[in-house]
Image (tube, rainbow, N blue to C red):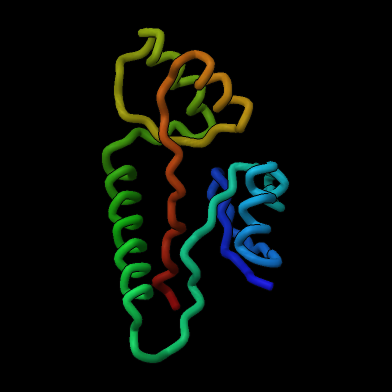
Length: 137
């Protein structure tokens, strides 16, 4: 049995238990994994926060570097993209069709909205955003 930290496209973090990585991949491909909070099936794995003290392995160093890169990407997007929240698909279509001025936007969308965007030829990239770290601890 393996436990994964998961995050939906809406930013909700939760845990999932699977027989192995193959079971996770199979269930994800079939859309069987959904957020328990919002039922979003756009779920991705997060780097595990679980760590064992000891000599850092090359794999753990790579995981730390990947997590740091993810944090830098999230900071860049936060500073350089307008957050349109759940209006992402509507705003992307307005920009695509020239109703609104082109600009970098970020936000959330449902799987149905993402299908509409693809059908309309709107290019977008889904990036899981790490949750802010609690600095009061």
